[in-house]
Every structure is written in C-alpha cells, then in structure tokens.
Image (cartoon, rainbow, N blue to C red; front, side, top):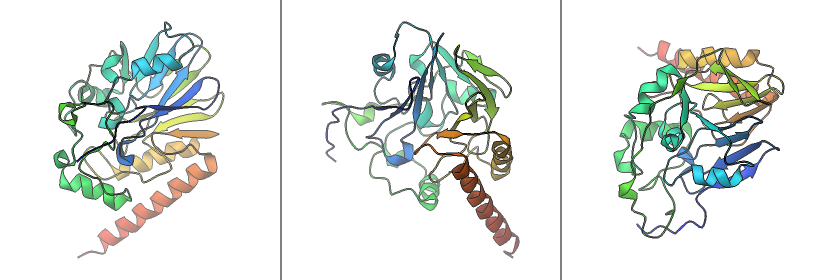
Length: 270
C-alpha cells in the first residue's frame, strides 16, 4: 500500500485569543482526536496529545506566544488517540483510574487494522464510523517513515486530577469533572466564568462509543445527568466540531432514548 506524503502533519485552528484546536488530518477519522491548546497568563495547557506519530511539542511551541512559559499536559483519558504525545511533557495530569494505563498502555498500540480486535472494529462500524483501511493513517508524515516502527508510548503521571480539583492557568480556571462511561477515568474541564466545557469523549457531535473495554452505559447515564446540571455555553469535544447547549441536550436525549430501546429489547429477548 503506497501512501502520499503529508505536507503538514498537524493542522491548527485558532478558536479565540487563548484557545487553539489541533487535529491530525491524516489520521483515520475514527482516531482523529481534537487536541486543545489553551494559553494562560501563568502557564499553558495542552488537553490530550493525539496519536504520537510525530512529536507534538515542537509544533505547539510554534503556536505559543511564549514557548518558555510552563506548559501542563492534561489527559482526558488514555485511549491511543489521546495520549500519543504525553511522554513529551514534564507535567502530566490524569484521573487516578487512568494512571496505570497512561504509564503502561495495554490497548491498541499500533497503526495497523490487523492489530485491532474484530469486536472493536465492529463496534466502530455499528456506531457509524466509516470502514478502516489497512492502516489508521492515510498519509506518511515524511519520506521514509515506516509505520511498522510506531508504538504507543505511555508515561507515568506526575499528578492526579479528581472531581473537584482545578486546573489553574492564571486567567483561566477549570473545574475537573469526572465523566465516565466512555472510559472509567474520563474527565472534562469546565470554566464556570465562561460556561466553556472541554468534554473530551464524554460527549461530542459524532458517533459516541459506549460498548467496549472499560465502557459502561450506566456510568454514561450518570455522566449525562451531570452534564444536564452544568450552565454550559459551548462544548469543545474530543472529536468533531464544537457545539452549544441545545445541541448537547439533543445528543444526550438521542443516546438515552437509544439505550432505553436497547434495554427494552434485551428485556424482551427470551
């Protein structure tokens, strides 16, 4: 299989003066996560670090107003598309339930479809994602890159985040919310002064994945109940475009109705 060479591996879009969305456009949409750079008065933050195909931090430094300012890395959870570059940062924060996985990842760790369990592939197809080709990348980052050389690298947490903690950048202060369902230790970051929620994979405007290792519909329902209580003005998800509170409630209603129907069907099955 011959892949083209990517001119640029990362793509950055400025959302506001302090917030930049970064994606890896040559990753299959299934694993094409949103990475969020927030530049603060006292320190900067990168929320999630993508697949780690090529180094992230040098690219971030081209976007930052002051590359010498401290930067903290927050991992919303520890799936492959969210911790690929975590080892590049000195300060690494994650929920306690995800710390072991971040230090020693045990899930998907390569770029090849052959290494994905059939059940996992079917879960993604059932959710509505397009079929996966031979690899999770659709271009090479540079001439001579060998996809076989890729391995997901973890890194030990240097600090832990639990519900009620805050991530303080100086002029941006984020409340940590534990939002399990997609992942046991999934977290979101809520800035109460603006109503902006970085929801990661707890909710985004695309096919949610709720059936698989470490996933729980019951926990997802509890997370959705929490989200209904937040005075959200804007949601930045872990995938797909950002959206407002009305769309957030529509997504919640859609999945809760789906789960109710699935539960009813299972109850009626002999």
